[in-house]
Length: 486
Image (cartoon, rainbow, N blue to C red; front, side, top):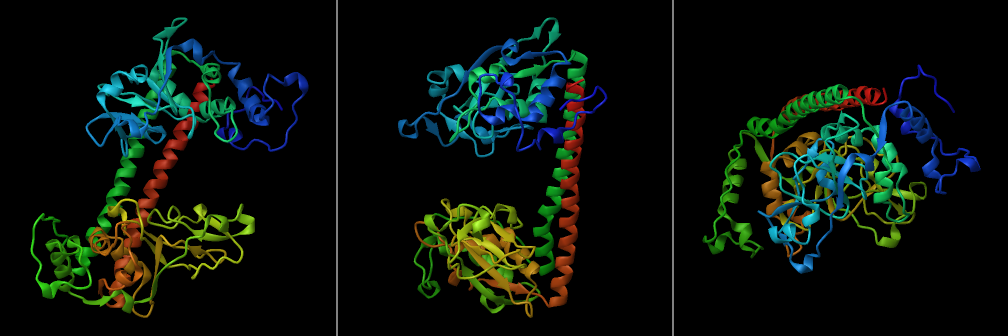
């Protein structure tokens, strides 16, 4: 397969290579794994030969990998330590410190001295999500584990200045990702070794073009962030709108170390947390709502947990299995039917899911996450689909309550406080019988519809903004990739 001089570079050709292809014996270069010889690699190699490029090893002064101290050796801190970056912290848009781990300064300065990060270093992932890169910003002190490497680039080569910002953009492009994937070795745990990484082709255009590429992507990420922020504000306003329509105020949460409870207030619970005084304030707000209130069990067809399959009950592939909604399938506002699990035929899942159902996380390693994820199934599953025991399925009674209204209230932060209160035991589990007793403000169906119609408008506007954010990034990357290849 050849390319003409007038053919434009199309990133899609790098993502949809043929599953069956021929390679002649004189084309073998020391590797016998088929993925190394994918046709799209050769298309890219021909384009790369026409532009000024080097091997990565020629452009760097230093390459060093991190390490992971054993937890048992007490090298970690809960907070206020040195950020210890893992693969999930390395993103196209920079270092993400959400859910970051921390190590002690003495570990950072002794055992992990070689992998201490400096300004303008490039962090590049070599296992897991291979090929992701981030630039180390000014005044950042951090370190990396063994799944990433720290690259320190030369100032220039052959009179051409090297911008680390450009290098990061290249690594995160379709071109860079494709070429980094070519060097991957290993079966059960694929990885990119140092030798393959140093041999990775690195196109290096003039400083003017590097600066232009950096400028384009900086503007694009700023525009993307602006649209995502606007979408986030819209989605964040949903809670306020719902509570305002119901005449409910969100109160401050103030936990007390010492408080008293009268015997006539004690029900079937003896755990002190259940009787914190701020819960009374929340319940009083529901009582003050301008609408009537009903127990959840009185306005639903059922509230029930699913069944978690044993390890041997899972099917090896989708074709042979029955779909099942897992905790990860229901981890956003909407159930993601592209992330289903599959169980073998004959599995008794208790109940199948249908459009309009929503799922509440009922078990978590950390108590505060119980009840936090509430996900709506907004489309009808193609097949009978079960759900796991870590999820409680709530199905509204349409004669009394609209599913989207009930979902909107129960997914609010106000309702989360009351749901999370119902957790029990050392393992922090939420039981459907406890959840059924939560009181729900219940407007007439016409008012419920008015509320849900407004919420749909908010969500549609937010979705449009999110799609626009993704679109501007895709367009910018395609433009930049054309510039990289000349």
